[in-house]
Amino acid sequence: MRHERIVLSICLIAVTALAWAYLLRLGDQMAAAMQADAAMAAMGMDMRGPWGAADTALTFLMWAVMMIGMMTPSAGPVLLLFSGTAAARQERGLPVSVLAFAGGYLAAWAAFSGAATLAQWGLHEASLLSPSMRTSSSFFGGAILLVAGAYQLTPLKAACLSHCRSPFGVLLTNWRGGRGGAFRMGAQHGAFCLGCCWAMMAVLFVVGVMNLLWVAILGGVVLLEKVSPAGAIVSRVAGVAMVLAGIALVVRGA
Image: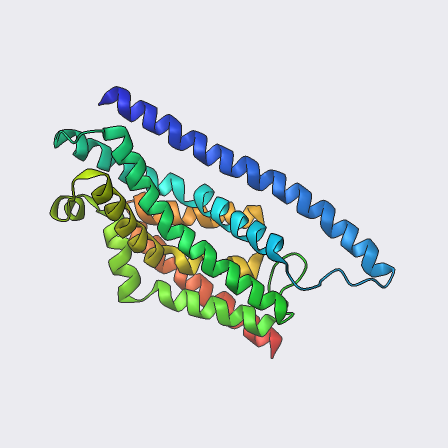
């Protein structure tokens, strides 16, 4: 088990590093594209046309890789816990079961990435998104922060966070054998994780979808929520901060 935990930990670190390498590369490419668009706009050419299929696919890929980079560190302990529990139960094909669990978890966040892509498309079509992929309306941005911050203080958020912080009991009571069972358990945990963290991800529409500094900050807050002894306090403090920031934006836009 020690060997397997080391291998799994190395894989998680590698996946996170690859996701961030892609995001950094994409960030550089987008910065260059924005400069080119600004030059075209200066010549009277509008470069903010409707999306095509390629734009939609690339936006989905961006969100999916971003979720991997943000969520893998906080999902690592659960994957290690699942691996240890499966080994203790003498499950067959342990590596495949771990991959199936991870696949179920990522499936939940892939669904979120699809929803985020549709939301970004809608904001783009409504001209509510700037070229830097942040909302161009102070009032709308403030509304997002108010909703996200208020959610942080709800019992549903607390219940989802409690599951994410203490998944061992849930794994034991809802254990399903085989690869299909591992996938379903991963998807179930991913659904709880999504219920815990979606509000944090919505904040990206306010600070900039590809603002990598804020991507790292929000990912760090998510990690603290899940693994820090004061995670519940971190969650509530983040919620209050978002509400106050939302009020400030709404007042500024009034």
